Length: 155
Image (cartoon, rainbow, N blue to C red):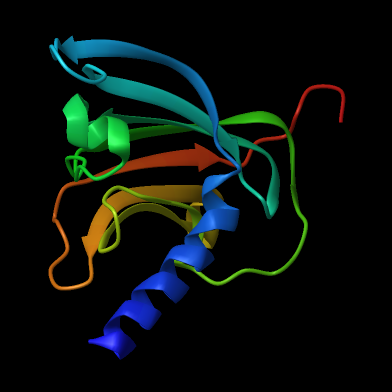
């Protein structure tokens, strides 16, 4: 039991640096709660840390109520993603396909939502996949977006 708790805490600490990169753009309430915050859909933006010139917009459910307000609720696995070229694309360093670009916990310990990146060299595109995972069983719910690598005006 102690080893499991230590591993969970270590995994939680690894998530912190990646989740701090997102900036909240906006939110809408989806269900009123008498006690605690309402259920909502959040829209967040983050820049790819390795590929300059790409910004991703992520919408995801955020559970409200008492548990949600205390950070104890498990958020739903559904998420949507749209990534766009916002400037000249430049690779800051080499990366592997499937590398995690963004990760945020969606429950107290065992569940997270993450975005991974792939480079489709044949089609000169970047593909971003968002999905939810659990320590025991992941979710097939996912979203995908592609960014064609295009010349930027003036470059």
